[in-house]
Image 1 (cartoon, rainbow, N blue to C red):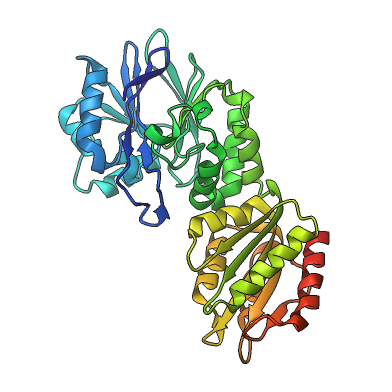
Image 2: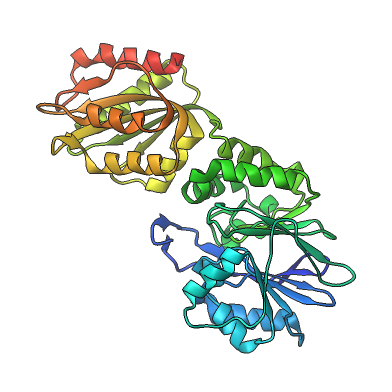
Length: 396
């Protein structure tokens, strides 16, 4: 679709509803959008290309939106292949265009398109500007490690439109989630899963970008994935990003994550969840780490301030799904949370020890209560320990 999002600025992105795994790891049942934009003034500026999977569709849409004009500039906000996948085809059709990116972005582009020369480039720095005519101009703000080091965001100062790269993005094709954030009944759900899995490790860098944005006038945010956000400052977008980037819990409650081999650990985890609810916990979320989407489990671990992990011992260590979950949390800079542990082992339980070691390596993780040890199956004699663990985490 081609839509005008502000005076002289058109959306020319494409949906991908066939891709099953984003970045070959994240389940996207609602697809994904690859967003691209066109600014028409005295000069013509294209804001990013799309994934090569959608090259023909995007090139046709671009040509239609240009209506006979020729691009002068191609701004590369982020050169990961889902956004730079059509650069080579674009340059073949429009060889006179000037590529605009950070110096590192231009370097990375050369790595993705080896052997290709770029005759005209403009390596921008923080605060540089690019006038496009009487009505439009771009002001560039560097955003290193949101979520790659070469990332560039661009503010079109006349319409107050921020081209935000991967910031403020979300999973989901626009045909399914809506073109505008206001049309999306639950923007935060897939935006949260997207943020913590794509950008979550880089909270300080996201906070730095938020500070830069805070000193500018921004009405519309045009991300590289997900809906366009209008009336940006009046929405919850900044509030949520401020919470997420500062590793502050968003929702009061407890997340119970379990990894069970033969059902014994699952039964104990569900029993604890029931105890927590009976004791008045406002929200208890539960995830089976052996079957549920890992990205959603990571999302919930960050969403809530308190977590219980229940896992089996395995090969004198920790059952693989639980280990992978905790390793992923460590990679994503999980911090500032209260955590309780349940281990299961028919003989010589080891899960608790390994989980403690992994959490100890994370920042500001407070282990609450005593680790509850189950021998194969829940027994009534375990009830007191579960009750005590529930009290410990609720009072933490």
